[in-house]
Image (cartoon, rainbow, N blue to C red):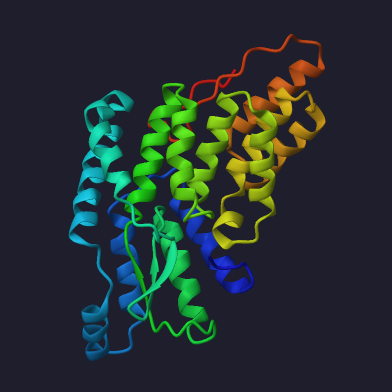
Amino acid sequence: MLRAKPRQILQVATMVRRSMGSEKIMLRPLAAALALLTAALMTPSAPALAAAVAATPQMSRQESRDHDLFVQANTDFQQRGYPALARRLPALRQALDRMPADYGQLVEQAGQHVVRVSDPGDVLMMMVGLSAAAGKDGSGATGATALPNVYGDIALMLASEAVEARRYEEGISYLDRVLKVQPKNWLLLVEKAAALQGLRRWNDALVLADAALADDDMLMLLHRGPFHRRRGFSLIELGRLDEAKAAYEAALQIDPDDANAKRELEYIAELKGGASPTAPQVVSPLSPTPAPPVR
């Protein structure tokens, strides 16, 4: 993945992130369209554009069918929540079984970079970064194409449903299958931290969050807020309240309107004032409904 060295690219990406809003966006058909439009705008002439389109990597027929399945399931999910996924789960699991072994988020194919990320803002950031690095990375790639991250998003959907139903081990198994080939997929990592916390594996979730926050990959840097929150959650349960307070304050520096961080800071203040701890409630980061209090 891209490293956060070009300062101007990071500034552009930050502006895009602020304009897109939520850090919890699942795949939308807009993502691929936005990225392809960006690539077209960077093409110097109509003949060059025609040549680029002819050589553009495409999804296989099976991947396209699996993408359609995900879009249908995501539409149901957005309209009616997790119960609407029940009838889709067997087909989604079968689709995940078809994920190619080399299904990375950034690969080279047919002389082009192929980008697979879920958030439209992330797609745009990657395309801008690859354009700025063209001819300098030694890869020999002459362009960039964005494709839907079909199997990454299917894994995220399956894991989110499993976490919501408290089948945490099952959720982790879906996530780990894709994280083997997409280790910088921040959405999957945040969901895995939630599943680990559901299992009361506070230290493991803390190690995951710390590693993510130490990563200098651009996408990881742009999505530090969720990892600060997951870090703070584990630290509370480990009794390290001062460190937890610092973690949530760091999340608020990124997003001053972060309601979860504000709520947890209030809870920390109550604990320091002598209040009795309450049982934690782990909520999937991708719930389509407003998040309930986490305590």
